[in-house]
Length: 193
Length: 193
Image (tube, rainbow over the protein chains, first blue to last red):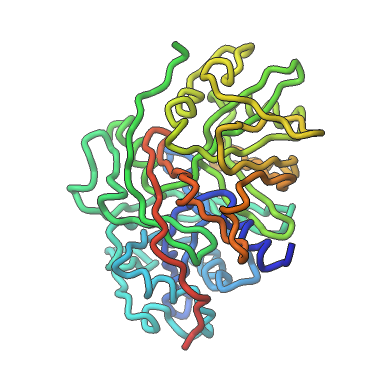
């Protein structure tokens, strides 16, 4: 199979994944945004999130900033600012902030180092716990603990369930294909009988 | 925050993730199915997929079978067999096959050890490459290379793009909330200008 076709299939095959902008800041103060899709839940108590990075891509600023500051944010993308969010995947030179380049708005919480994306309805900050080498192909799993969560009160149900589709959060494959999501049901805890 | 509420929020927070049935078989020949959502693309060449497992849950049969046989399948879930797929999360005793318990149909390819789910429109087999301990919380990242892909010819576009929403593939959070996905667009490769 031709390599570009193979890559496209490979990135679609595992299915629709979350799509968030990762917000970081360099030691020189340059703010950075990069779209990430390889985000997963690792544990609930403590609340740990993992994401996979390749050292040789646009994500290298993100990785370096996280290693330097131990801090980053994850900001869910919605259709309202999808074009600007997608544009953050462009390979800007090191001194250029994706906030300035795309018009997205940085938001800071007191005491926080990494910028949030003001336009995002669901955003949270993380602190670095662990960077794990994946020997099979030289990628890295970055593990962080969630520090602060910002979301509209109405989106959080009494059960702790978060209304992701009501908030307009998207999913993605291959960082080029975007999906809206529609909740079709919640099923009860399954028992053998 | 109350612990059950915290878990629910924690599992929703990273966003809508893929939802697949993992098919395995024990050395004694007992077929096993378990729903997994923490599935991510690690690389395209070779085509590597990662998934996260906790040793202390229903997933333990899955993990043991993978460690023993080095083989498993991933089978995308659609709304047509969602109830049966969800039922596979029940904690059946060791000698019970989720295929028998739920009525789903095992499918084997020549030379393959792990069963596919015949009802699934997109399914692929993997071979174990690496098991990585995540020290932060005792979970494991299982890394596999894709061996064989089974999908309808019409779903694979010339570009390699896979029509996941057309195939009815779902997404999930918390292994209890299910989403249909609708492709809203494919955006061109982003450049700085």
